[in-house]
Image 1 (cartoon, rainbow, N blue to C red):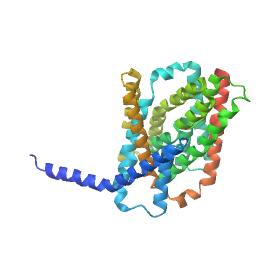
Image 2 (tube, helix red, strand yellow):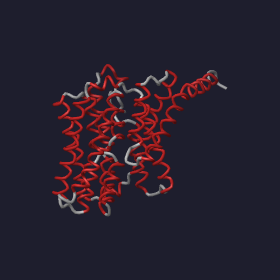
Image 3 (cartoon, one colour):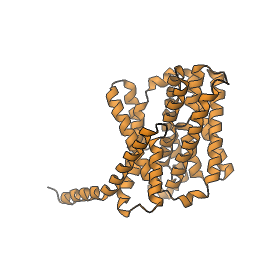
Image 4 (cartoon, rainbow, N blue to C red):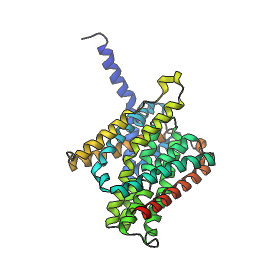
Length: 339
């Protein structure tokens, strides 16, 4: 046995013991979040989890012993969840949209992200919060917020506020877009494409598409998942921007050119696209992905300080409203022009 091997094993055991309190608290929060979602299916467990984390932190329930476990849930577990998210996507489904469908997706995502960044500057919202809101509203809600947080220097307060905005305005869009299809005389496929491009969270799209029914639901889900595909180039782009903003003499602080979890996400997409992964495995992976992202959101939520969020609340609400209108408006115009 080499010298130093025993201490290394001892350190590993010690590390696990250090993480245990935080991981137990995280597991309890995940279980409660899932229970709430089972009663209220329109409420994402990610949203419940970040709220529970914020509540724990702000009522004085957060203990120093939780720190190591929460740090593990907030980074490695988060990235594992994003990798598993790639298994929801098959390239063939995206190609099946055709040129018109992909054009709607790309136009909506690019326009929403760019407009949100410009509006954030105009409203005086911080750069980090603006980037998180732009990512969440243009791509896939809370998961995109978490992915953007992984390559930027945003703090937990910004993450919690961005997730809250996604929930509020995604819910509004989830209710409004199905109701507006009839007065706008949209065909079923047009209505589904609009819902998929204009509603923020995947779960919200499923609910809104179900309200329309038939062909609209299938189209809405495929369009939405096509938006999720753009998560990888978005995160890579944000990582490049962050590298340029970081001084060259701070090489250790600079984010990687392409984060490993993005490569894992792309590998998961490629694996799903081969068709060799069974439905049973996909179901398990989908469940694990939801657990991982819910755990990560609870961990991030424990870093929230309501007093720090209060000053930016009104401007952030305006930004969320404007971003939602841009997403829905651009998506509608693109659908009417191209479908």
